Length: 299
Image (cartoon, rainbow, N blue to C red):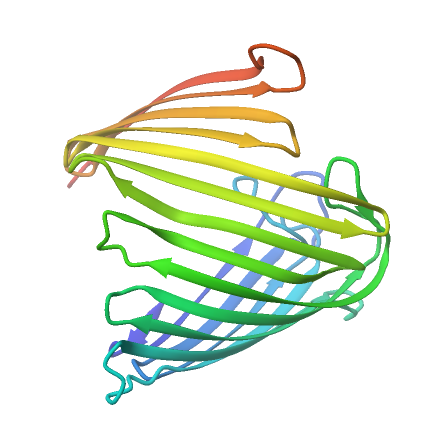
């Protein structure tokens, strides 16, 4: 990873997995280049993930594919419109194809307009044209699957974000459009932050999806709230509570972090997941308590 000045950068990686029992097609690599000026931006990357690549730690969403992607941006600062700080027009293209046969799996054309206001709020609109090829049925909920086949669909998203300097901030969005051979309507509130006190804040999130498909209609709701309290700049406790209607589950996470020395940390984490299918108090499904400590050694 290296760059020239503040605008041009190049990055990439090469990895090879060696898991016993897997074949020899176990490599993954990527190359990226970008120019990120204030007014103009360009970027592109090329990614390969072979069929037997297994990182052991982490997640690979799909294998045996190559991906090409490119993007362009134009971000002028209009001097004659006092209430607008910056406009951003951008467009992007992504193509994913199978590595062995070269057949198209996913293709996405996207573009949008974002307006940053002088008070740091932002509003925008974004559209996308999608092509998806499914070689086997895709499960999109606990009860509905999309049949194998070729699909073309498009969507548009409206978004408004409140500036981070506000005591209450976050980003609200509405997406309407196609979803494989049906339609989807999504309402979301993300990156929310409410500063209750100087050391105590709440971070709420909500996502609602209404999906209508020939195979069946369904809707999902995910609601969560995270709370953070800082005892000192080096010690804090945080908690997350979340409900997912699709899996009928209620989960919680409590984490304590203490940086007891520069670069050295101690963590205590408690998690549990409960089912809401029964009546009364949600039934416990799993529970874990983890302690972790690391020490930075300097030589």
